[in-house]
Image (cartoon, rainbow, N blue to C red; front, side, top):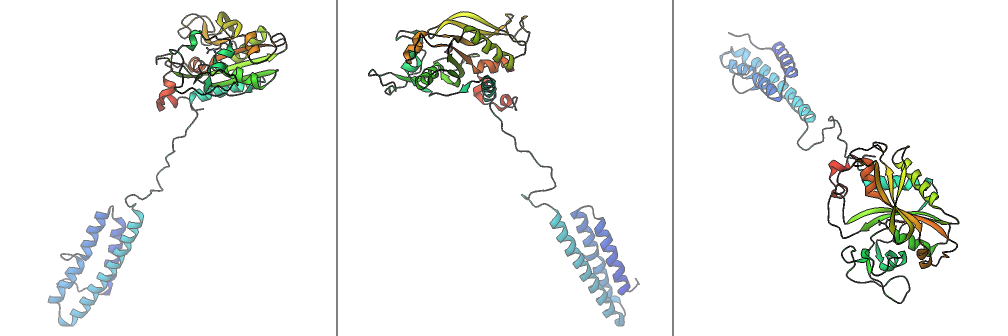
Length: 355
Ligand code: DAH
């Protein structure tokens, strides 16, 4: 005959249940513990209930009372346990505030913007103002005023993207000029001189368009930075000094500049601008194809015909101009193998310029 449960045994069982539950390793574990005390079969409460049948009549009520007390106490503890377990466990879709935070990816400027702003900063420090002009241009600003006559090869349909609907030129001249996407930023020189008198010291960055097929070094859209300085006795030495200062700031403190004689209708004399290879300092390497020099643009002394086109006095005014390829500078500065990378927007490329 098992001992007859009394209020002391109720207390003992409650304490045992609470201790077991605290030690439960998992919700499933806890369920097993609860069933051990409260389950329909073979549990402590069930066995106490069963013992009523065989108990002496004067004990039946006391056993029933004890079994009931234990049942209620365990049910209460179990309800508490479940409530706190539910509060602790993250429900599906809920935010788990204990997880470490995930940084949203930080955006940054495009490499060409970074290089353009760096170039702007260098020229601003030298006293240049930054100006802009329209990307849709008329032939007069882009060609005629720049001393490029009607039969100039650059005006060919093969090279220039003309707009289907000609818009009347803004020159006020009676003859109408075709409109086009500007092929170079040199058109901004003309617009600026039409609106301002010397002295002038400007750089004009912008996109330009040409009918080129895509390859390693060509895209139908690219960017240039035009420079124009007009004043009394502006010399070729001033031009070279300006470009040397730019190269030393942009590339290397030991950069040198070389002028290669060239031809542009709007400058005389004209030159291609090479900078000494900053990688090998001019001794020859893979980047400069062993030549020691890297080409960055064109330049020259403003042609008198250009001054005349904008109504300046070609006897009085002197000036120099240059045009630098922004992609070209970016390619050389950051050793980019393919110009197309700048326009494909592949984050694996763009993320390498996080400044
Ligand atoms: N416009 C020329 C080009 O598109 C670059 C250039 C050459 C600009 C000489 C100039 C210059 O201002 O003087 O390639």
